[in-house]
Length: 311
Image (cartoon, rainbow, N blue to C red; front, side):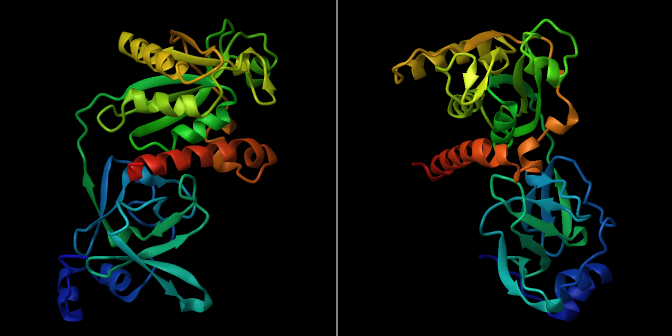
């Protein structure tokens, strides 16, 4: 890395606190659940406490339950370095700041999609830069079959702030999952997406919506049948309606079968039961997740990687 920072131990001891020196320069580990940032939720960038190098973004942070700040992706591939660590009778992969070689933590292969990685980082190795957001967070709502699939797909997108699954478009107030599955409530299973339009456009979210399901299948996605699995776009503004209709019409030109996606005004959103939220990432070993959700997520991941590479 350019602008490499090299200092003597004496110089580091002058600029770091004793605890920062112990962790950053000697590979120590802070106690779990004690660090400043393990539950920190502000919007911004985490930097190396030793040199100020940007290493992780808050948008890539997740709650791992380990007691240390956890991220599924660094700022970029050049901001950190990794090396084999055989200390303490274990074989692990150490994560270091690429600018000053400060010890940040370790990376494990048990994180969420889209990377499957968990960067387990010491709070004391980090500092935080707040990013003031002047943009208005917008809402988009889609029905595309089982909401476990779309929920996982939308969570992969840079610029998406949150995803909640629930029910929309029916007559029953505060419906339960059982009532919706019975097909009598009139609701569709939906994913409601909160996104920053300065980071991701509604059109790009629409692109993922079309790819995560078959919009030519009426009231059915795979083995899931019923009106609750209908393809639907619930627009929240005239601009979203126009974008959805244009996107549908462009896609129709490439398809032999007719697109049956409903495009209707957003109605009241009823949040689904807690166990449905982020279902795939919390239940990846279940048969349905392996057989149905995972192939769709891999397809979206491949699409995003190609788009990032400019292919």
